[in-house]
Length: 138
Image 1 (cartoon, rainbow, N blue to C red):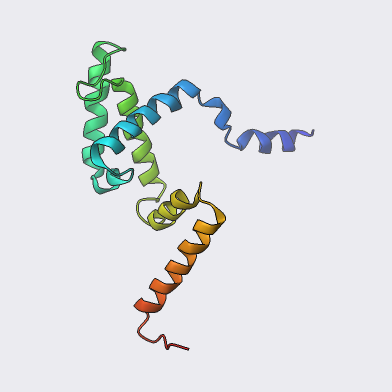
Image 2: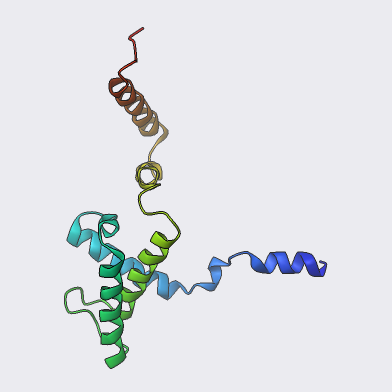
């Protein structure tokens, strides 16, 4: 492999460098949030300032004791902070609502059977026809 190819290869993100324990702790916080709020996407309704404030509160708690846990969830304060940082990065990358519907559809279809997907597509087309004032019945 030449030097140029090696440099290009090294610029690609390597998700394997993210520790499983980190992902697992964030997933626990996300699960708690879904159970508490009933939605995996309600964080999008909060302002950046509110998210920053929550992140900092959890970091300040963790500074006291690295193993300190959130009073309400019982989960690591640093995991709550990391989750908030994840939300801020997601917003920063411009994915705050633009792809929201696509993400919902992906989430619905990820483990769906082909029959369920076909049913969803038919329903989607039906809704499009109902919303289109220029659509004429065949």
